[in-house]
Length: 409
Ligand code: AMP
Image (cartoon, rainbow, N blue to C red; front, side, top):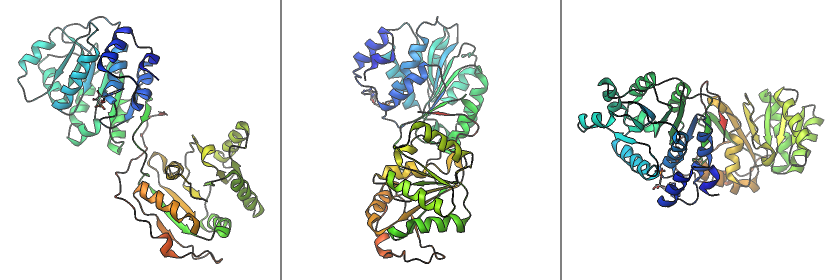
C-alpha cells in the first residue's frame, strides 16, 4: 500500500515523497480515508504512530481547491496542549504544504502577542494553536471563525489533563456548528468520551492502540474444573446463577456442536455459530440470540469477530483461547459502553499455561473460583492454577462514547 492509493493531488504526493514517507502507518491507513470522506473521527493513537500526518494530509487535500480566507479568518484550526507540540505540527505542516498556495501559522502563549496578531491579519488557511493563546487572540479581534471548516484536537487527553477543558468549551462555542471535527487522543478515558459526545457527529472510531487491557467494568474469574466436568459445571452455573443470555466460547467447531447437544438435552436453548455454518445460518442464529429466542450462544473465535450485542452480562470461556489476544476480544463482548460485565473461564489443568499467557498479557490475575454447590470432582491442584505471575497492570481503557453513534474501524 502506498500513499498514491488515497487519491492525493500531485503537489501533496510530491511533498510526501520529499519528506520520505513510503508506506502509510496503521493510523494513516485508517484515518486518511475517513477524513477525506468528510466524516468526524475519534482516533486513539499514541505519539510516534504517525498521527500528525494522518490528519494533516487529508486536511490539506480537503482544502486544496478552496479560495484564500478573508482577513483574520481561519479555515482549519488545530488545537494542541503545548507550545512544543504546536511547533512540531507547524514544522510537519510546512513540509507537507510547501507545494501549495496555502498559508499556515502557529500561535502559543509565553511570547509577545503582537507579532502573532500582525501575522493573522490577512487570514490564514491553517492555524495551529494552544487553547489559552487562541482565546487571547480572539478577545483582541485578531481571529474570526466564520470561515472555519475543520477542527482538530490533538492529544486531547493531555489537554484535559493540563486543565484546558474550560478553554476548549469556550473555543467550541465560537466555532460554526457545521464543520468537520477530528479528535486525537492517546487514551479513551471517560472524560475523552464525554468531550467527544459534545464535539463529534456520528464519528468513526479509529483505535490503533495495542489491545492489552480488559475494561475495568468487567469482573473476571477462573473456575477450576476437570475437563470432563466443564459442561456439567456450565449447566450448573447457568441454572444456579439464573443467567439470561450468555455467550460461550469454545476453541473448536466440534466442541461448540457437542456443547449445544449437551445443553439442549438438559432443556437449555442453545445454538452454535462457527466457520462450518453458512453466513445465512449464522446471521439468523445471531438474530435469534439478540431477540432472546436462544439463551446460550456458543461461538468459536473466528465466527465471533464483529459480533456486537447490547446487554450481554456474561461471557464464558468454555475453553481458553490459544492466542491470549483472543481472550481480550472475547471478554470485550461484555461490559460494552461502560456497563458491568462478567467474564468467566472454565480452566482445566491442561490449560494452566494458556491462563498464564493471558494473565501476562492483561497484567491481571484472574480470581480463582471453585463452585461450592457443584459436587462432581472438578478439583485440580490450586497451586497449579495460581502459579502464573501477572505483569504490572496497564491503564484501563473504557469503550464508551455517551450518546455518540460510532462506526468502528
Ligand atoms: P507522529 O506520531 O505524528 O508524532 O509521528 C512520528 C514520526 O513518524 C515523525 O517523525 C514522522 O515524521 C514519522 N512518520 C509519520 N508517518 C510516517 C510514514 N508513513 N513513514 C515513515 N515515517 C513516518
